[in-house]
Amino acid sequence: MKLQQVELREVALPLVAPFRTALGTQEHRNSLLVKVTTADGAVGWGECVADDDPTYSAEYLAGARQVMREFLLPRLSRAPGLTAALVPELLRPVRGNPMARTAVEMAVLDAELRTAGISLAQYFGATRTELAVGVSVGITDTVDELISAVDGYLRAGYARIKLKIEPGWDIEPLRAVRETFGPDIALQVDANTAYGPADQPHLRRLDAYGLTLIEQPFAPDDLLSHTRLAARMDTPICLDESITSARDAATAIRQEACSIVNIKPGRVGGYLEARRIHDLCLANGVPVWCGGMLETGLGRAANLALAALPGFTLPGDISASARYYTRDITDPFVLHDGRLTVPTGPGIGIVPDPDALQAATTSTELLTV
Ligand code: SMG
Ligand code: MG
Image (cartoon, rainbow, N blue to C red; front, side):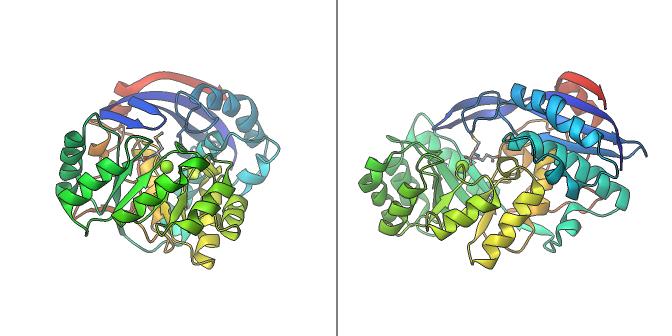
């Protein structure tokens, strides 16, 4: 295919409730969408999951926009016979900026698969049609508020609960959730790098709460502390921020820094790299699950296709649209018996609703490439 036009569109979606993590509090989601149109008239959508601020990772939305406009898209538009499989190689000269890469790769992949008439799940070779999903519960002002939030999610049918933790908000909320809801709910925690190596004795106390995993307690580049903690804790260690490529995943597994991997396409530079990490982990007996970045319906659709692969044995942070937004830019994903349906239409299987998209749009930039 040949790219003819690219639209960068920013949308602003208020969250149904503020989402607080060790990194800060988010009240709305600004998302940068990429719409490609090919010379044959095929359209593809991509979503960049970078936040406004470089706090989760070094990438941020305004920077991602510039990188796409000036460095990524020109490399794709120059390429004859562009296919999604060529995108990682074409973008290799540009370093970093995985969320920007993912967005453009996703848009090309969507356009290609729509033309071919196959769904992203089919392209991956995924066969599951619906998936049990989890929910990520932010830090609240009080334990009572947390209990009522968790209660609502369990009643809605979520298959597992992930609590955000940080120093000062870990043992007490965990104990309260276990005491209230019992030993049978699947429970895990995510520290978003909030602890340091000296917190190891404290973190070992989390073993008392029967967690599925503890996600990213230490800094992204501190594999050694994760390895040490893994050797001293019964709770499995899962890495998120530390894993930015299949090579990283291989290193972390070899160094026994984790025994479970959170796969987020935006963090690893694309859906194709995400798939490679899945394959590597499957071959090594390492369970994976799909992380979330408060995606709109577009990213959510693509994440469901990825998470339908067989190695995704743990429920992902792919919650129903209503957990995030009153009005998403696509038709909402709705929970049925704790499950979401994997889209079956061509490409990512969903397109923005024109009215909802227009209502959420804060800027558009048309690039003739
Ligand atoms: O999309 O449901 C979602 C959010 C899941 O907790 C979630 N994501 O570290 O895993 C993570 C966070 C990153 C986003 S908040 C900074
Ligand atoms: Mg995380």
